[in-house]
Every structure is written in structure tokens, then in C-alpha cells.
Length: 334
Image: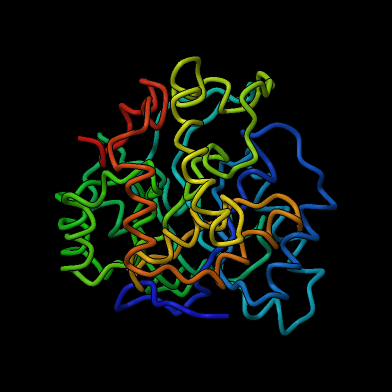
């Protein structure tokens, strides 16, 4: 397995990480046994980075990862690095009510995550969204204190803009920024990515298949359950969906020329963006994981990259990344 650094201060991790959110939340029901088997298959293949959030299924995802790690062979368990997002406030009905980045809350969230995961430290810890009522220096400073005490190894950031990144980096060493980045979500290229590169901060890119939209597996007539995030996502609605799937058809032509799947060409594109970028793949089954890992064997030359970006121009996507209420929480979009 190829490895890449999480910035100049972070650990080396597998070139692809496994995003575990879909095993617990937001994409409809998942099979627990298959989820555990998928985590084990990822570890067996050399994947070292497991990404989660303490609010994914209100703790379910962390407990799932903890279960999988306990059942894994010791050598595989020891190689696993766990990245955790915190801060989202939720109600018993699953509702969302903002983010809490106060230092006391940071310590509280971390204590619960350590217990659910069954580990003695969290490898990378980050607030999921900027708390507008708490300076980023206070939140990052609290994580840095957890690093000093051995409860956390590295400080990360999530979905913040260039100005916030600079303020955070002036407070403590930052390993990586987790942010959406894909063929159809390229906003970070203008200001955010140059800033992380200037400061030696890595990028863990989530949504590289845009929640399945550019995976090649999403049908035009697919019906989504009410508890599936995509049922409310602008990019999956009406004319937006039709226009976006036209882009996928163009991408499919290129994939077929290479003898690979649409998902593999999209992941290979993300891998090609630089050694400082580690794509996260949200595979929920061993079959999808195997497909994603196949992207590591796809070589794209300059002419291939030009063809891909001609087929899917940077500004061609229809619809925002999130519904308006969630977009308002993205410091990265301001």
C-alpha cells in the first residue's frame, strides 16, 4: 500500500483512507456484519486511516469501529489510525442544533470518543464545523492540550477557510484539513489548497465520489429513502440530477477507454492532485472497497487528466454541496 504524509507534522497513512460514516448514518440502513467485515478487509489491504465522527449515528459509528478493531488481528489493529470529528449537537430525534467548540466541550467529547472506540488515544481530532461563537484558537488550543496529555496525537481541521486555517496553524501544529474535494467539488483549489500547501498542512478529501453521484452506480430513476441524506441534497434533485448524471456519462466514456470503472477513474483523479492529498472512500461493503482500491492501480497521464477535466469541467456541477441550512455552517464557503 502506497503511503502519504498528513502534512509535515502528521503521520504517514495509506494513500486511501476509509470513511466509515455510511456504515451508521445518512445513507439508509447498513449491514453491521458487512460493515465490520469491510473494515477488516480495508486493514488487511493496508488501509491505515479510518475516519469517523462522534455524531455519526450518535456514537454508533465509533462503537462499530471499536468492535471491528477489537476483533482484528493485533498487527492490523496496531496499524489503524483513527480520525475523529466532534462538535455537532444532536437531539434524540436525530435533529441538528449547531456546533460546540468550547474547550470544556472539546474535553468532554474526547472522553466519550475514547470510551466508545476503546482506545487510549485518538490519532487525529478535529471539530466538524467551525463554532461561530468560539474563536478557533480556543478550540484548537483545547485539542493541543489533549495532545500534551497523550489523549490525542494530532490536531486536524474540517471545512474551514484560508483565514481560519492560518489562525489555527498559528495556535498549534495542524496535521491536516478534512474537506470535500472531487471532480465536481473543486472550490478548494482557488485559495484553501494553496494555503494548506504553504503551511505544510495535508488534506484528507472526503466526498471524492460525491456521495455516489459520480460513482457510476447511481441510476437516473433511483428512489431514495427519507433518511438518506441525498434525498435532500440539491445535487440529487430533478434537473440538477439529470445534468450531473450527464457528466457521469461523459466520464464513463473515459473510464471505458482505460478498462476501469467510473468510480476508479474519479478516485484516481483525486489521487493525482498531489502527494499531500489523501482521498477518503466511503465504502460500506467489501465489493465497493475492492473497487475503490483498484484506483491505486490506475495511472493517469497529462492527456488523460485533460480529457477528464474536459469531460467534467470544474464549474459544470449543478446544485450546491449541501442544503442551504447546512451550507451556512461551512466556513470554507465564505
